[in-house]
Image 1 (cartoon, helix red, strand yellow):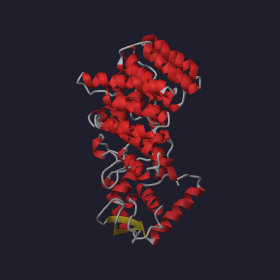
Image 2 (image 1 turned 30 degrees about the vertical axis):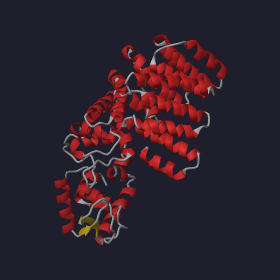
Image 3 (image 1 turned 120 degrees about the vertical axis):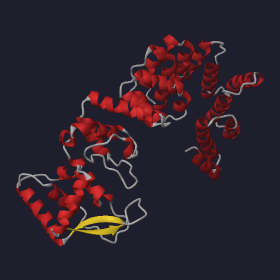
Image 4 (image 1 turned 135 degrees about the vertical axis):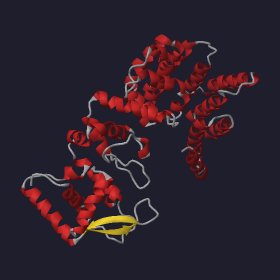
Length: 412
């Protein structure tokens, strides 16, 4: 056996589904004409021609079936008894000749470099873009290809496995990967997917654009810290001097959230050189996490009086975590009164949230719920999700399970 024809590959592909019943309700899309074309990386017209030939030879039969995600019955294909015997013959011959046929049938089993070569240069960028994008998107959003190298489901959404994505991206050189990520970042620009855009900007090496995005969407990232955000920020190394005071505090907050105290230290030192008060605040947080409460308190005292809103908010939070609840609440009450008397409510939600944090740090969940309820009335949708998450925790702590579950759902 020197090579497998398209017809041979089609028969072997269908042989993987020999055990499927014609009456099975939710069968796989891979045995439709479109599914077969995508799996074998041939055109739909080519698959139609091959299916017709194999049907005339008695190797396959056509039937109607329901598919996963579909509401109507559609054409599907399966091997006849003669087709199964032919598939067995092909496998036996390949095994005798020492040929591994699976990479020819399944993109997940292909050698990554052979896979890139097989799709052709004219299709490579479309496939690469589909592989770096982390979500399933409409196939029509991607560039056209001369071969169906990007599988899609019944709804026209891309369906590339993580294994295939990893194979394609690992086989490409670094500059090509950056090019794909850059295109993906631009794809998300007008689709209100800030996190996805940041992920691609960072991986594309577009640090200035990434930092501009972080500076503009600071609260979004601070209120949505999770493992994914940690991984994204960990790759952001080159912060232009222009953005240090705006972006470095966000990265430090993300790093401290992850518990990586060793990495946070040098970043805090760098911030202190540009913004002494903010740097000292993070230094105090770092010492609290290290367990040196005395040193943390000394650092807080060294900050001195200031009229900076963010710094005073941070000082109150640190004092609360140090168990100095009364001092922390006094600062926050003064900030609240000043804000209300000025007729400005912007930032009031942050004061109430900080009051809740201080209360929780000292075991007072009832007060926390009271402050968070007030915060809900003056917050935007982004912050509101975080507030509901905090409410869920506080309600759970006092045994109000149904309220905790209700708030937990609203936090999603």
